[in-house]
Image (cartoon, rainbow, N blue to C red; front, side, top):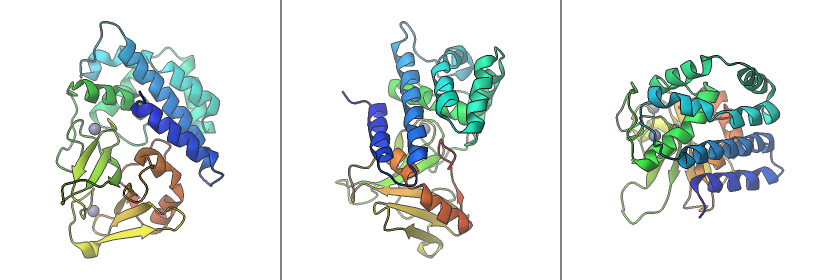
Length: 260
Ligand SMILES: [Zn+2]
Ligand SMILES: [Zn+2]
């Protein structure tokens, strides 16, 4: 059975093999996904253990699962992250546990290590239907109904139902939820004149969905045009579109794991 993680890894390897501009990013992301899969497998494989849903209770297990990820980042990551990973491997301190708990209560897309390890943890919670506890997140339709995370990427897929066929994929638990099609995923703006799309022939199935009211954007992956795409990974592949968005004054709702 091909798991969620295998699907992401396979697509990242495939896209990295293309000699395009985002090769380096995709190679690194493929390594990260492998590390996340190992973390997820370690949670799943623990005998007589299920997550409690309260990170404070589970933090020792979560922290103990990180060494493989830290080693991969120390070996393959960009210089600054590699250095941080090495430093974390060398210390016995509780600093990482504090970081994890801070991220849990108030996530930030720049907390790379906490986000990397808590994605598989939250994904495992979602699969075992154990509700995350102790988070102080905004809520509402523009955040994940399961874990409260922000949307990482939006995608379109054909569905039988005639209305909404747009989903948002959560930056926390990596699950998706249905969302209306012509609405800003950040501020809820609905006036079409305020919502803009940018598209480049290089990425036929990917576009920037930007809002002129809050000046935020998210990338949209159109699976009806290209069903083989994997939103989380194709989003990274289309990194050149982020450049366009930034140059036009838009801020991403949530940076992806590799910081783009
Ligand atoms: Zn979520
Ligand atoms: Zn907006």
